[in-house]
Image (cartoon, rainbow, N blue to C red; front, side, top):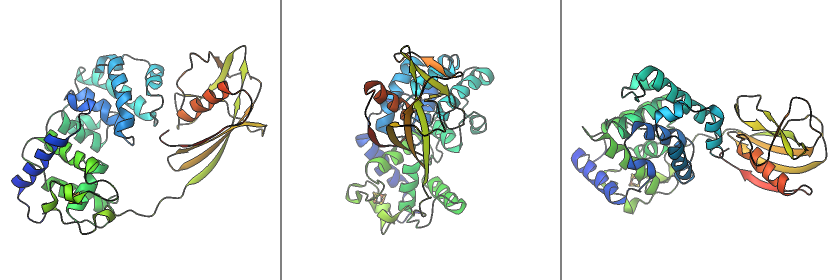
Length: 333
Ligand code: SF4
C-alpha cells in the first residue's frame, strides 16, 4: 500500500534503525507478560519519563502476579499515588486476581481471554500479544497511529470508525510475518523520537523513502477541541490534636482515595489550587473548619492514598498554616 513498498526493505530499514537507536527503557528489559501488563497500564495517558520511577518502584514491591493479587487496594493506590487515573491501579489489581483465580496465575496469551480481564481493551491486549508473545499484530498507540497515518498520507480523522478501520488495515499491511516485538517497538519508537507530533524530523527518518506524507505536520487530522468545563470545588482543612481530617471519595472520579472534606459554606479561603482532570478545569478553594462526625483523623506522617491535587494542597497547608498560596494548574491527576 505504501509507495515503493518493498516489505523486506521497509522492515530492514525500520528494525535496523531501532536496534541502533531504541531507548533502554526498564520494561524493554523483560518479556514477562506481567511486566508488560504493568507498563502498559501505567503508560496509558502518561509519559514515559513520568512512568519510569513508578514502574521501577512497583516492580520491586509487586514483582509478580501473585504478590499483586494478594495485596490490599489501599497499598496499591498508595504506590500509584501521583500517577493519576487511579482506576488503572484498581483494574490492574483486579486483573491480577482474575489471572490467579481463572488462569492459574499465568497471563493468557490469547486475545479473547485477555479481553475478558478488567481494564484490558484491544490496545493493551495487542501490546501483550506483541511485546510478550512476539505475535505480529497491529499495536495502535498514539505514536504508531501517527506514523501509519503519515506513511499513508491519511488526511482524515483517525478517531472515528472509518479512520480507525483505515489505520488498522494500513498497520496490518506493514506487519512482518514474524517478530511482533521488534516491529511494534520500532514503529512506536519512530513515533516517539523522529515522527513526533507536530513537526517530524523527516531527514533523519529511516523509512522516508516509503512515506507518502506531503504535509506531515498536519497529520493526523485533529477534530475541533472539546469544550473545557470550569468547576469550583469548596474544601476544608480541619485539624485537631495533630490529626488531619479526611473523607473517602464519594464519587467515581477518585474511588478508593481520601480527600479533604467538601463543604457548601463559603469561608475565608486559605489556599486556592487549580488543576485539570480530563475536560474539567477545577478551582479548589480551601477554608478552615472544625472537625465533624464522620470525618476520619490521620497522622500527617502516615496519610492514606490521596489524589495529587489534594495531596499537594495538604502539603502546602501543613507547611503554611496561614497565608495564601496559588499553584500552577497541574495535569495528569
Ligand atoms: S518521513 Fe517524516 S512523516 Fe514520514 S514517517 Fe518518516 S518522520 Fe514520519
